Length: 269
Image (cartoon, rainbow, N blue to C red; front, side):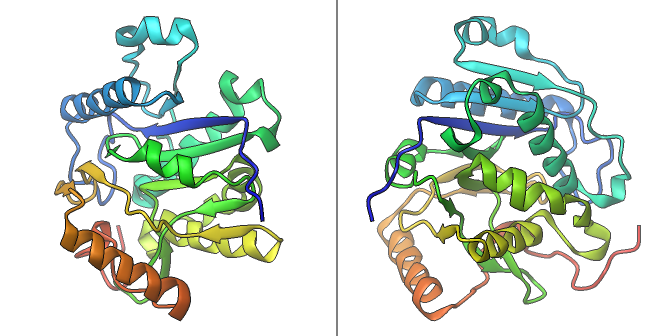
């Protein structure tokens, strides 16, 4: 089957500078978080050619630092008050709100038909060092690219740090389910992402995991732990073995560092 390359890939960076007491979020310092968002954004502007949509949901506007990029049309920066929901629902719900707001309000997205837009969604404080290599290989209009794993409760999840998918997937499969995200009931963004991918497949869409390991660097907002994948030989070999087990044998090994130490039962907040 010949791949059909989308006309316009958009790098969608999700951001929340001020979590303001968000449940299950250890990294809460707004100054530290903003510096990390800016560091990642600077990296993407320098090291990729993608048009970038950054959406921030706590009304923290640092767009003045990027006037030239915004003026040129390379970057669109949106900020809004999107943290008015119950804090106990968690940051995953907030990220879904960010996606919804960006898709509904972005001028970058409005100028193109939905079927011509391919969103490369990355958690905004993380840098995917091989993002251009991944897009060169993974860009089919009808495929959602995301790795599938298990959580601490043996439930199915899709890793959310990097998801490459048609805009229509987010609009029609994921966002209609966003109200189900609730950390109190250990139903996270990643669980709903997995369910959405399964629905996408049932409706005729396709899904693939990454044969090339995403080389992610940054700090987890959940645990405040450093994330770094340097892509050494041992790491690559282990990743490829896991890929084969997941794709051909249905194995869903525990691979998501963001879930380490999460409670094993519903949380009362």
